Length: 169
Image (cartoon, rainbow, N blue to C red; front, side):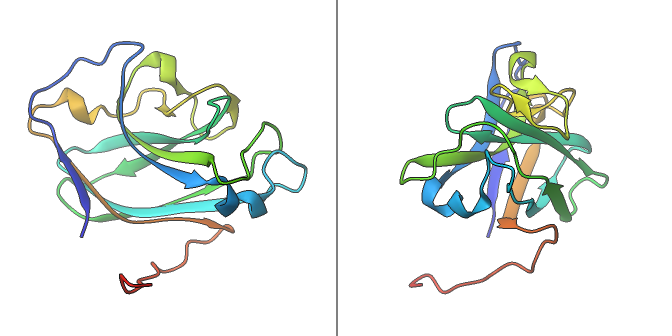
């Protein structure tokens, strides 16, 4: 099983445009990360991706207010091949992170993100950045495909194997 996107018609992404896949995570589920404090925990984002395009792709970890972001990149070297990705992110020691039943953060995979929502990869920044500067624009190529599965966001600096659970659980 995977989440897939196919571009029906190429789009020229404007500076204030963005196309993305995103998943909100409830604040209660990130409270133990202690983000916004000196005790912020490191996390690892892991997933498998299959794309008809190769290159450097991007995404971001963003607080709900859109005031703190961590743009990241990952590389797809071979088209139409499942590629395992693992990204380790040092916890954010500043900023405000919702730790109640509201959205605490969004995990974003950029499909085509304009310059207003892009920033340098690999560092926390003040702002609403959904991807890394210069990342591959999936929506810029007619017929392009992008599939993703096995997404895990977990505390620690090592990705663990995907936790398969029965639907009823």
